[in-house]
Image (cartoon, rainbow, N blue to C red; front, side):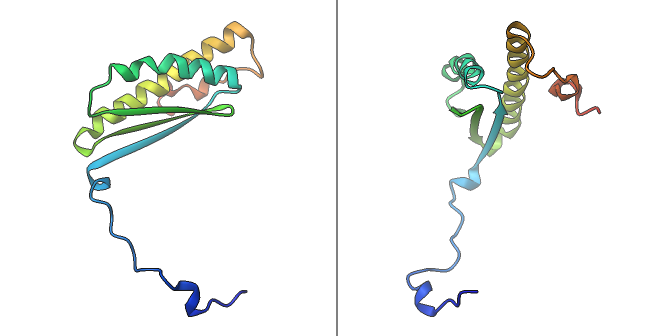
Amino acid sequence: MERLERADFQGMRGPRRADPQCLRRVILEIRIPCGSRSKCDALYRAIRPDDATAPSWLKIEEEVGGEELRVRIEAPVSKILSARSTAEEIIEYSYSLLRSLELVSGPTGGFDERRSPSRGGED
């Protein structure tokens, strides 16, 4: 194991204080595996228009990375339930759209009904 010297810590300060802005906002990050880049792109294009109609206090960002769509929802802590509802809607909509795309384009390994978010975690 490498021995650390005092000089290795030169310029470092104590623990950072929490940014006050962070304490007033909630951030939800959702990662949706799509199975292919084309399905991610389709889901991205389907969700994107809703951003324009979102309230000014709600910030929604989407990003496609490989075969995964990442959605970031940011809102004031006072609106945490609305942010949660938005996340749930995006998850449910994504599931429905991806299932529809799979049924139209043909299964790529079957579809598992137990994975449906609307089932409420039943297994």
